[in-house]
Amino acid sequence: MKKEQVVNCQFSVWYPIFKKHTIKSLILPLPQNVIDYLLDDGTLVVSGGDNNTQHNQTNNSDSEEEDVQWSDDETTTTVTAPEFPEFNSKVLKAINTLGGCVFPKLNWSAPRDANWIALNSSLQCQSLSDIFLLFKSSDFITHDLTQPFLHSSDEDSPNPAINYELVLRKWSELLPGGEFRCFIKENKLIGISQRDYTQYYHHISKQEAQICHSIQEFFSQHVQYQFLDEDFVLDVYRDSWGKVWLIDLNPFGEVTDSLLFTWEELTSGNSLSANQEEGDTAQQEAPVFRYTTSDVTVQPSPCLSYRIPRDFVDLSTGEDAYKLIDFLKLKKRQQEDSEEEVEEEVRQ
Image (cartoon, rainbow, N blue to C red):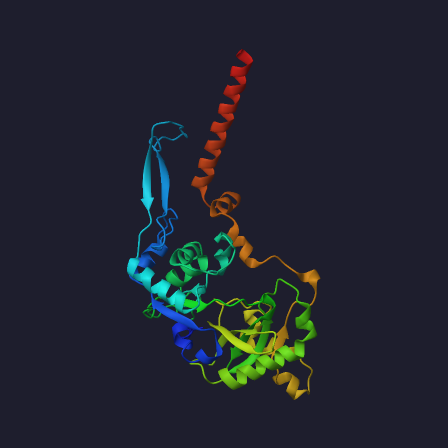
């Protein structure tokens, strides 16, 4: 996977090519001050212009001392969310144009790892503040902004200039059982994987042949030889009427989740054709279709790991020694306070 392939998989590059076969979307340039706000590691204060959210942050006056000190002598600082009135106006106009509810993403990624923080546990957004809440809580979005060319084979070459964009897609209720990821190598569809592979969907095994055929037909009629690269990953959705829609395009490489395949077998090509019957030419030319075949193999969603507070992870793994020291000091202080209370009760 080269950096040029990553650039070609930006939404604004492929959307004009396949506009007729995907969900209606609008693209807004992302101002630099908004990018800076999204990358700010400070306290999460959601902005958006549609609210006056404020957060009270307490600073202990004796924070420089080694031990934890509890004191009534505290100062309170009001942290106000930055406002982007012009950008907010453009976003609200775009949201209204798309029906009032949208699915947001950046050039490549959507904040799928942050849906837990939303009140409705959904990526559906109706305002800029909804979008900011998801974006500032998402590692996927941070990856887009800081490491878009991770795992590129030509990592020593200069990084292409990226114009970051906010992509707003008309909200559509997509059933996870209808989503599939297709792997394209040398403009040939070599593999299809169930997207939500952690769950078992009975209809997939029942309609395996129809699903595979409809995806192959969609690819050959609307996608093959139309994209800028010959190696890429295609996300599609097959609705209840059997129609296939293009959802997303991704780079053909480790930066993209291979789901029920491995990148070793996808790049070599040998392992995929090895399980086809020899002598059956039609079978060998057909893509390998993999899906969860039993509810016994159902697994937790990979995104669940993003719901664990980072501090808990650091403490459990010992990655941040300072947090561990602070935690032990706090526990020691609590224990001492508890012992003092017991002694005082005994004296009385």
